[in-house]
Length: 120
Image 1 (cartoon, rainbow, N blue to C red):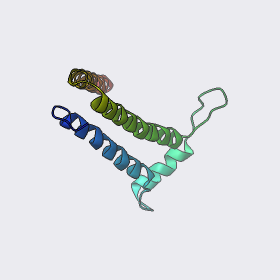
Image 2: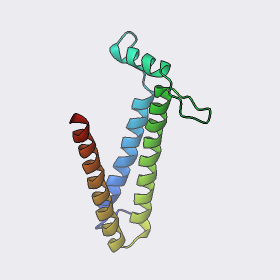
Image 3: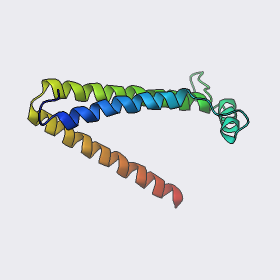
Image 4: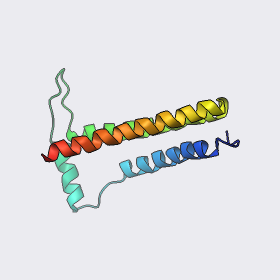
């Protein structure tokens, strides 16, 4: 896994696991009582959206679900990267790196374009 040519790839995978842990810690911390964030969180938990099929979650429930999904996704990506680094050839590691870079670039372009469209 940490052979020459795979060290940076494996280090990136381990850093994703660390980021997932920090993200989870941030998810489960609560804001200080009386702060603006506490008021915002109370409002989010009180506001409900009808999604149909009998589902009526609060905005806070949706945010919580997406936050935990992000943690699961980061750990899954890291596990996949570590599996590629330990079992794959050097060519496979290069291909996975290129695919990951391109997909990250596409996500960034999508987020920037959505942000620009909302402003206009």
